[in-house]
Image (tube, rainbow, N blue to C red):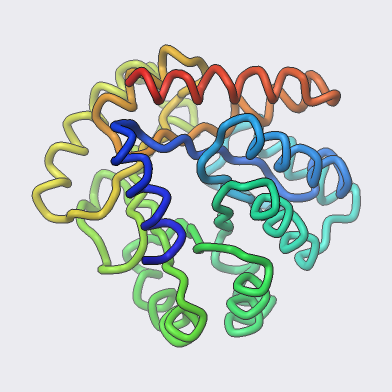
Length: 260
């Protein structure tokens, strides 16, 4: 059982969903990022997605886009990513990396896999379109087996299913680009999508759609195996560099998934 399988099994045994928190590496700066991911893990996140700042983040909302730009402006280097991964691991949560495929490809797939494993990383989340899926699968196959960590995939509503590896994460296209549906409507639709997806996979299914409060986390936790929160946590860190708001929100979310 790998680390992701283990954390979801433990959450199931406790009768709850997992709390998955996202923060970008290098934000607000290198040292600040290490402190932030540590606080996130200590305050109750079961899994921490460490994001790779990207210069053209097509799927991210404005809050995460602005954070990525600041990290890059402050000199983020790809190797800094693994220090954040190690910090999450040391704080007691399960770290995974979330990245577009191009930075991994530039860094070197086998080198990335080796460095991620050495830092204690449990997996890679990558947005994969239908056209790119075969390329990414071939690139991940060898190092993924060698270092024994899964690749997680973000599925949009056109790609219901699984690739036999990792934890499918469902993403409904439109929310991050000013779609007309409200976050509540996205959560309602995601409940139906989760129900259909369970017919084709027994892997844990995680949902991150406009969750920013404990009550919203409780709502999603009622039907998903994991509740993903990103922009709200990044905004808390932006507004309060002392980490007080980040810790407080994480504790509220952690309580929400337990109630769900």
